[in-house]
Image 1 (cartoon, one colour):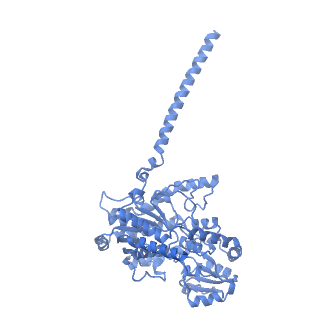
Image 2 (image 1 turned 30 degrees about the vertical axis):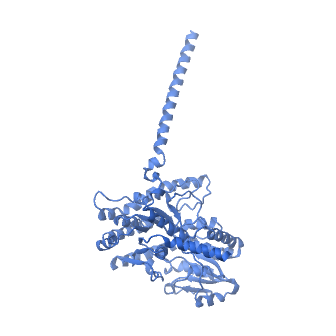
Length: 526
């Protein structure tokens, strides 16, 4: 009977996914690494659901070139664009230096603004490529699905006059910029390193960071002003702040299994866990290596696609020493050709240029994930019930690890404080303390118990927008109001003015009454 119900459910899901009319969808991802991996999955899901999908992909930068991964064959189409070789050479050199700074714990605002400056320059070239833009316009797409991290994605959609769905590849980073209600008493700001349980000083810090975020956002948007003025007709230049609120849907690669509860709007959809899947068998080479540790199992180590080829001996030496003290074997994603020659690799470590992370975490002998704290990695760890050690390096990884720690999934070590002794002790604690495994099991149960898998949730919501011709019915009218009306500043000022006037009148009456009483007293005394 249970098998029959399962079959009927699968049949029902299949009918849902294939019943809608085919649409032409443009997916826009101008970054590599986890951004590309997520959009590759999204594009494939829409293709599998019967839609005609074309991905606009920027290639030639190290974040894609470094991936031992290619888009699926016989799936969606791809339109690629690349900057000149001369620019890419200088950009790649700059980006490599930035990665080294990340591994030294030096991730600051200036680096981020420089990065946005590069994205803005690339954006100007992309939108200025007349052949590319005309080719995309001629396809007459029904909707665009864009990477919301890169402001250029919004500008490309506007340039092509397309309605769009914005995909936020990480957590609710600066959600208030995109219209989300953000009660500062329990919704921590980006990089605040706060949880949702704040005392007074935490709420004060959160409020200050909220105010400063508007200054930072203005600095980011200033980097794109030249691209906007150059590529749009005078008098019709778009405003990025307004484009952020124009999305038919805002899709967040987040999940309340790890995220702190917060208020959302009707046009917000959470699909965290898109890359998490049942594990497939690993290669025989990896299986043989895992067997050498017996019941001790193995540890998976990956600091993301961007940092797997960075040669920084001081950090790699400390990590290598820490791993050498484990009874487990270690499968570490790091390009062997970039391993420092003066660091002798521990015998229990296997370096691989690329690893099947989802499949390894789903292996019954996986004991721990050492990660940079990317949300996709954390959700795969949750899905497969594996505790984590986080070494956050940049972006939202610091906030992600705050959430992972708060949920009991693991521990965090700051890279600028990374020492073999501390890393070894932290790994031994997380592997040996059953509470971390119990938390991983509990979080996995929550995540897997969602009514619908994230893949289905994503496709059906976008098809809902396509079927209705837009998402106006989901967008609050308040998003069209100026900020002083949204936050009732005008009402508050009016009430303060009325209160001030009432207080002024009361004081004048009291002073007048007191004057009359004093005069009456003087008359009686006389």
